[in-house]
Length: 95
Image 1 (cartoon, rainbow, N blue to C red):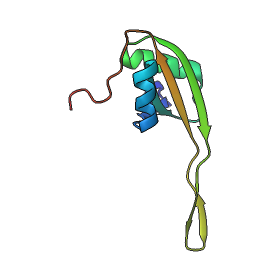
Image 2: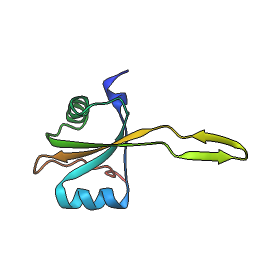
Image 3: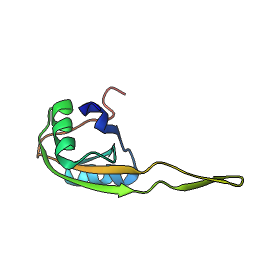
Image 4: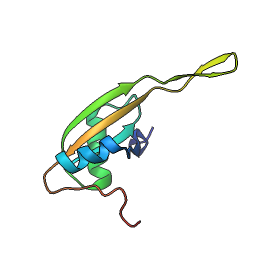
């Protein structure tokens, strides 16, 4: 697995934008197997910023039904990444 595949996508939610404006944080959806050191190196390499702190949260996949069959969505992980003062990651730049 390559380093870039650890970070799946930015999470653009209401809570994520509020946290981003207040605390200079960015929220990403990452692979459940990724640890904080791996996430730190990937973010610093991809976006050329300095990461101060990372908080992660694991989420269980929801149970879904389709008729009688019961299935489960995959588990996922969210990473709150605090950037150094003055650094920014613009998710919507160029739109």
